[in-house]
Length: 175
Image (cartoon, rainbow, N blue to C red; front, top):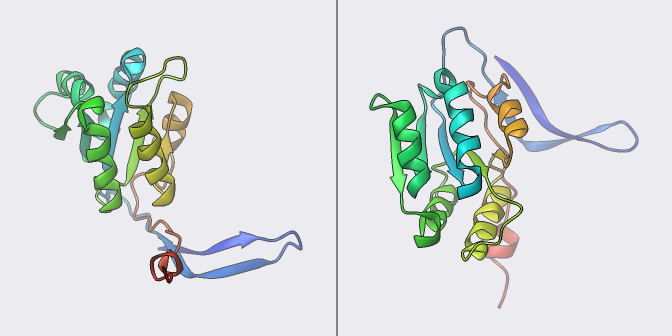
């Protein structure tokens, strides 16, 4: 077991150890089940499906969550032997459903191939989803390169405790 304290380098070269510890467990033949959200805008669905096909074996042991049409396409590629939960289409509330899963700590990783060249009627939902992935410190890929880096990381199939900022001061503020 490798343990690394949640450290942040300072300009002086010294480290501040936070209260929380990141535990990385690397054991042979042990796979930690990840709860992975797969989402793609219409103009990026083919890119995501191509990525899923390429990584089919890396996705096999994990629980997948997809919005609407993306879920239908992913199901066709993966077949019935995968754990896949289909949510509503993004514009019909699927992005918000996914955001709720992130807030409830039921998503570990977000792969969201969004289209930077088009505006969408549900842009506010997309922004809210991405905000929640940052707020809850969920690894998030918005393009194939980042998705490749994440899925090829030694942390992908390991026990990784992400550090979530303590918002108790905000929650307990006097109104």
